[in-house]
Image (cartoon, rainbow, N blue to C red; front, top):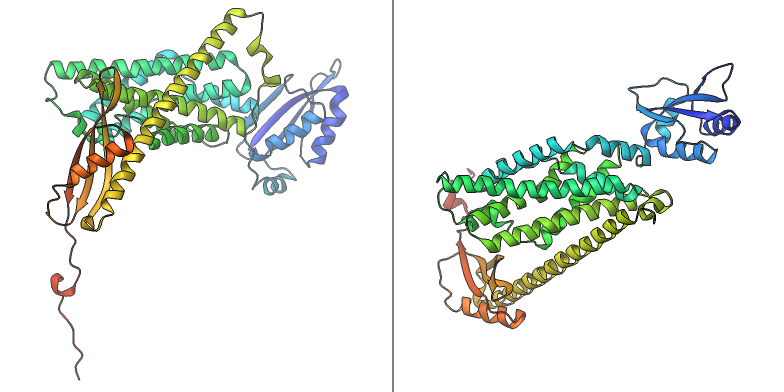
Length: 441
């Protein structure tokens, strides 16, 4: 429920009130000063989903929103037509107005000090959670990470043409990423220096191994999180839970970068850093595109954004856009190469296991570890996980998989086969010890 106050000039009074009458809105007119007034204050309650429709009608009638418009929340309203209005707009999807969107986004923003402090704490918690391989602790780090604020203000600044909001939000995101990585580095160094954590094969930790490089699924998570955050912002609902999803794509990857660097795994550090950059870019792009799709636009596509009088600001903006495009292009190309490579491997493994001699084997997954070969960043090891129902050996399988990988990718990584054994329970009544029942004659 919204309670709206608008100030209208005397000459616009008739058309604006006529528009409210046409929409069957119950309103009250308050004279500002009976002796000198040339304006009146109109107040009316309205269901939240009807704000966009009614305000659009008032703009068409000549209302100048920039003069004086206040929208507040109301617990309830008893007017002759309120129930009818609630029924009319009950099934309408009506995103927040442009002004409401900006106000809601600004309410989510943090000051720099509190933002940095919360990112620092969330990175410490995420580092600890990754090292003890605890999903619960890692999730806890996501809950307190305030990345959703600058992500949403960046999207709102972009679609509304607010250059200052956009610039400050991007800068705050960059600061947050740096703080998260540096915090993880410092905490990891402290733990390793004082032997508070034993020597680890960090790739054996499930919470880390899933974040060693970008993949199609991680890119999808970032895009979905960004789009969901923007959609949630444009509605009347809360965005706190959506913020957890954004942090899930960023904080653990930043912590993995720091851990891998301290424990001497440069390849994993680079892979998780690329994952982090791709995720933050994907989240921002998805948020911007979603808001644009919902109809938010700059006024006149923001002539101020390209103000020729501000040559320094324009130059900085253009350089920033070019740099961002280069990073996006490189990240997208690297992700495409990796996804294509892993898909080729999966197809090759599946074609081999389709042979009748491997009928008892089930393909589970492949994992690729990358390394520096000369000056190139190339796949070094491919581990193929296969489940089987017996302990039968397949000595030729690794070699066949190796040849298949070479044929399909023109690269020659080391191929390892990891078997997972399991047994199928016999569900017959005899094996379960269930007695048979017989009917008496």
